[in-house]
Image (cartoon, rainbow over all chains, first blue to last red):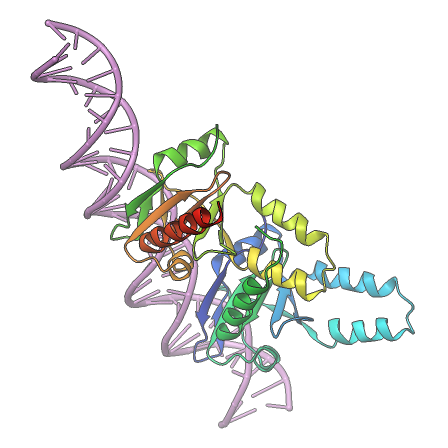
Length: 142
Length: 142
DNA sequence: TGGGCCACCATGGGCGTCAATGGGAACCAC
DNA sequence: GTGGTTCCCATTGACGCCCATGGTGGCCCA
């Protein structure tokens, strides 16, 4: 059961740090992930995070395409230009940089949302809203 | 006959715990379920619980879609972001976290409702009401 | 058949541990 | 130096693990 599940909202402190929920840190620890790959999500106004293997997976996808294609170029623009490596401090917190802040519209609180093989950082209200919308649009589930 | 049947209402104690009805615990024990997958229901204002195989079923549904599509992402937002693993304490109780409380509108009492292959946690009055409504609509049809 | 014993379930609470958060001080780069 | 980080340490409240109690129903036996 080594998945990122559930969601939780934590406060950003005066130094701009937030605690990553211990549930998520436990998943990272089990996978022996030291450095996190963070990218600006392709679908939602949220920043996604996971171990480096996700970046490698993205890169393999690009590698399998024609390097001069518009598709491959746009993909690289997103996963490389829209991604950074981050690491947690000794207490399991991460610095909420402008890279995250601006893209997700985050100010003083962050909602962490599990997404199975990765997790995301959302502006709390935006998360609530998107989840409610998804539930409303729900089709064949249940 | 390993189904979740009937319903019962239990009180939440000062530490925020409720006993899961022994009838339901017996079903879980027979299925050798240790960890419960709990998700915010897609239809009702209730939290559903079942063994981990339900999550796997949901994930297979997502796996059959384009991972970059809005649909797949929204579905993941519900089953991953709106789901969590929980476990019972030594006495068969579970902690009623905000994850459950806020979504179901639960305050001091919980109604457990059997749903065959899973069971749900409801705010008692909401359950009564929804059940009454279902009964009325049903008789109107037949 | 009545009484009493016992098992089980729902519930309460103590206490140690850990997570989330706040803040000081050393460190680094420009 | 000045501002931004990183590395520690402290605090407080929440949670996990354990043991205790009361109430109810079932079962056995006289």
